[in-house]
Image 1: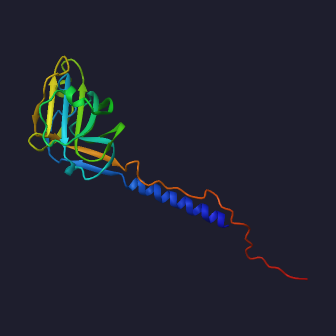
Image 2: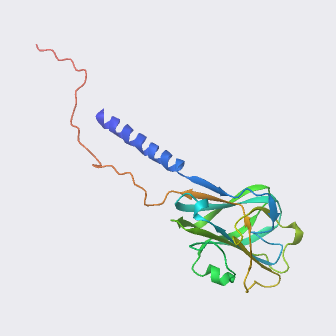
Image 3: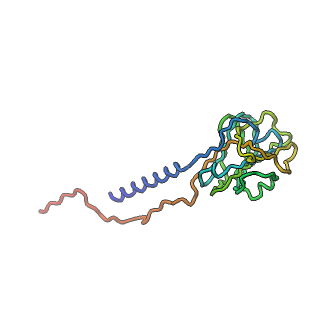
Length: 224
C-alpha cells in the first residue's frame, strides 16, 4: 500500500516538474511598427542580407533561443531559401561591415527554404538553438533566391524605427554582395521563443527503491 502511495507521489511530482518547465517557456516580442519592407527575407533581389541589432534591454530573459519569428505584412507564394545567423555583441550601434565579417564567429542557427503564405507571425525552428546569456543580440538573415530575384511577388515584413544604427542590409542581383552594407534604423519586428537554460535544477529521487516491510491492515485475530 505504502509502495503504491510513494509511486503515485513520485509521478505527481514529475508531472508538476514537467508542467513547470513548459510554463517557463517565454515569448519575447520586439517591435510593433507597421511600416513595410522586404527585409529580413529579401527575395526581391537575387541575393539579400539583413542584420538586426536588438539590445539586452529589449530581451529581459536569459536562456536558450529555440525559435525566431517575423511578422509578415504581405504574404507570398514565393519559396525563399534562407540561413539564419546569431551572435552577441557589446556594441550598441552597427558599423558598416561585409556579410562575411558578420558571419565570422556567428552561429548558423537554421537554414532551409520557407514560404510565407499568410499574414501574421511566422516562427522558424532553430536546428541549432542559441544559448543567450546577455549582451546585445545580432540576428542575421541570408537569402539566396538567385538570378534577379522573385520581384514584386515576394513577401514583405513589418518593421519598427529602432535606434539610428540598428539595422544593416545588403542586396544584389546576379551574385552575392561582397561590400559593406547600408546602415539604417528600419529594424524588423521579431519574436523570440526562449526556453530555460540546461543548467536548471534536475529532479532526482534517492533512494531509487525502499523496502517498507509488510503491513497488516484491518486484520481480525481470534484466539481459540
